[in-house]
Image (cartoon, rainbow, N blue to C red; front, side, top):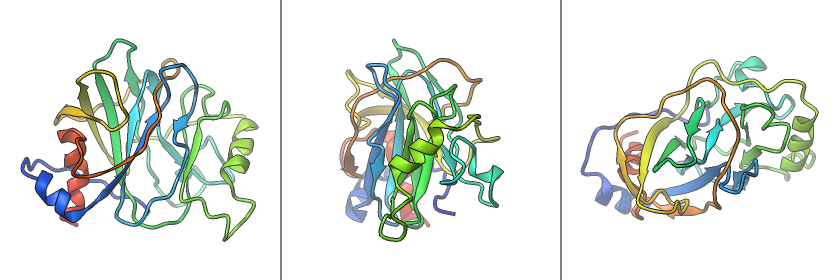
Length: 223
């Protein structure tokens, strides 16, 4: 399995994380201008890196699939459980940002989509560690093209593979998760409406990510 799930309650982890030098890749799920996309949608992450998904309004998921069957959870077509964030409802006026954080366990390509409505078919797809050197036909563009033709868009059956938290915004979302967080994970809900967000980037664990983000990253120190 490429990612591991984790739960931490320790509070004094910031300095340890900074010393560990863990890299956190931040991905915005949806955008504030209404477009359906992950920002960025094609990232390279080393083993041990963290990927934190930050959810914009209105309601999205991060769901893993196989390359050949996009818009379907990977468990439906393989013996891999995969990752599934559950639905993350966010109102346009919300001052909190749900996050879902996973740790990279190997560099096998990871194909992801949003299982809300027709978001997968409409281009809300992404890949972690695309490897065209191994197979030049398995590109994000090819995956997205297959997704556009899919007749279904299915969610996972249970949240798996990562840690969820809610970040309290101190102003406009920056994509770095700046702010404080509550220790409670954001739950799942029935499918709702569509999209939103801003561009994302990657940060060092010692940067200002919010306490909840640091909780998720800190697991690297204890595995």
